Length: 199
Ligand SMILES: C[C@@H](N)C(=O)N[C@H](C)C(=O)O
Ligand SMILES: [Zn+2]
Image (tube, rainbow, N blue to C red; front, side, top):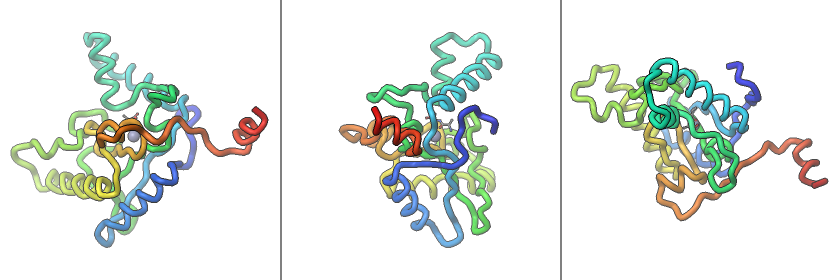
């Protein structure tokens, strides 16, 4: 999508990969999981944050600084490399996913991936009084994704139906775990290995 510094592949921690495989294998025949995003460099997190922050400011110029930050954080975490509070996608523990059919085509989840609207809240359809047949389908797809991921130990970010965590700080928070396992990560490239080895 032309994001500076973005990587072309989706990388996640091995533990996350194994749990994802288990979640995908637990789904009914003919339904699979598409991984939309995984590990992210800090530069990309900063770009996403700035871009959404600016778009919301443009759309709602009267929002206070606090409200603007709050609205932005609903859909993009604050960029942070702090080992004690890293942005979730910087750890390789966060993953954005959706369901697909047997042909690999995405199922209807009610909104697009990364749509910064209230309908993207995971439980949005759970609170609607009357659902159209299409909304019922989207609700059922969200439920299926949610339960298959939760069964494998992931937690979901309530403001995004697609965002799941395993072993990072959001996981510790929403899953009531004592502490996170994963801190900020870098890709295991030859350059990074030499940097580490040579100090
Ligand atoms: C940008 C979106 N896909 C996402 O990952 N949002 C969460 C909140 C994040 O940035 O950690
Ligand atoms: Zn995410």
